[in-house]
Length: 299
Image (tube, rainbow, N blue to C red; front, top):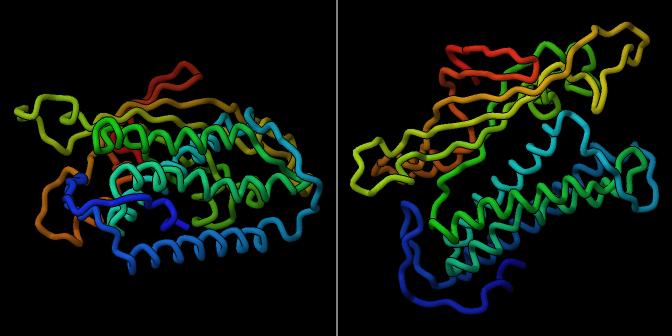
């Protein structure tokens, strides 16, 4: 599938962040990337259908407006996922020998393409539906990585995520997760989404400011035990606490791991792989309850 995007190539070398690639397609890598991508996409969609949708009633394809749910934290998650997939795929396509623009456009849109399969499954489920809001932020996540590569040939502003267990999953474990792993995905109270900007990238090349220090702003939500409202009782009829749903905004520092210079190729690969995780730092929180909090260490 990805091979079909290669319309032309040249033998010149192009600098791509900290790597140098040949703009000559390497057939073995390209075929492996294409087949692996197709297998991963089909396998994950089939797996989701078995684990998530199989026991849910089906319906005709329909739309669903969920834009008010979870204080839009789920939308931030869609944006983040789409961005992250494109972020990695651009580099994978360059590794396979595709030229820069082909890699940026085709690889950058892989996140939207992957998530579209999940949105279609939602569209045939009577419990959900195809969300235009999700589709919009999926596309925005792809453009976030594409436009930065086209403009700067690097990611100066990186969407990131951090997570800490919240106290709310205990009230509705079926909805918010009954284990640490499931809570990381389902409990939006513990998730924080960030935009982490590399300061040095916006300064003169001669600047002595450390290349790896970032300034980050974060977005979170708290007090949520339901999608668009908090129920009074759980599934067993037990009374639930009266919680105040509110938004949270954060200011913090961060580290751009891809700006840390090292001669070890394996270490650079690890740095790029985990760079979408916001590292713990002292953080100031502002929230819609009109309160300001200082967190010595926040994750």
